[in-house]
Image 1 (tube, rainbow, N blue to C red):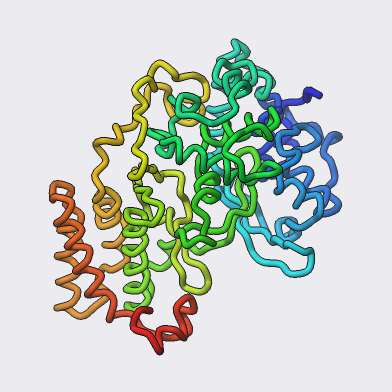
Image 2: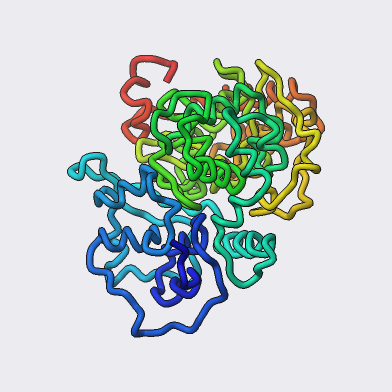
Length: 433
């Protein structure tokens, strides 16, 4: 059933930033904002109704069937704290919101509901979709995307192959191997009977939802194919729909720029270890950052550091080799332009040095975290090594050597106490921790 009222107009009438899904979910219509009508403002009576409103299920159906949609229906994601009178939502949309999540409706834990695109990006994306169908004011997003040549190829495909993702803007898909794409399909959690490399069990909407997610932001896909439960430095994936994601809550790394010296040393040491694991791991994938900032990293309440935002991670298959997107320019379409400009080009995978993530972190993150934390001789050593580590012109082996020296200095500066619960009390009995 096609909605008759534009989502931006609805969002304005309701006045809730959480209603960005009405702008972005696949089967919504988009139109220019209309003046609010007080008589049409619905009453939010329960968390169940608010969950329906948040998902936009009375106007959109892209979320139906996803695990996160079922969570809303079962009231295992609650927003009661959002409705408190003292909690004032800003006029501009936040990038993430706090909520509570349960697996059994009894035990609750804090989670983060994150927007995968900014409000501005949402608006640009929706306008581009409608404009591609020569309907600049209103259109059915799902109808337009279903008619594209790329999606028609997806409908016929039994297996996700590199030609089906050529031209998509994510660094994850810049030069994907078949092994990587099989992992995407096999680990995709939003379909029944996950585990097969073939897409026979995917419905049309499943395929469109996966394609759309790959085109908009691959962060939720990376959480599924490289899960924290298997040792990857990523938070637990709890579900996603449209352009939002629910994942385990973390504190931002920049909140620790004023941390005590031992805590700063611990976080810096963890970050260097993470970069090493992205470069060398048992699966023989090389994961690299295209850019970094402190907001991409988060800390759990046990002191463990994780990658909070994986959208800037590229993946190169060192075992099977990567298939370069030689025809990427030819295959560009509306899915190539939902977030970035259609002319945006990613560098060739052959030009990505293994030192890249280290150099970026040494330039953009570690100096702020470690600045002025230690006595003069030690601080001077750290500053010199950070400067060397951040020099992009140095050969890879030299940068790796500098990072190793930096870890050797940071390791004894850490302390062993309950603040670092992720390694306490093991650190009392084993130097490994």
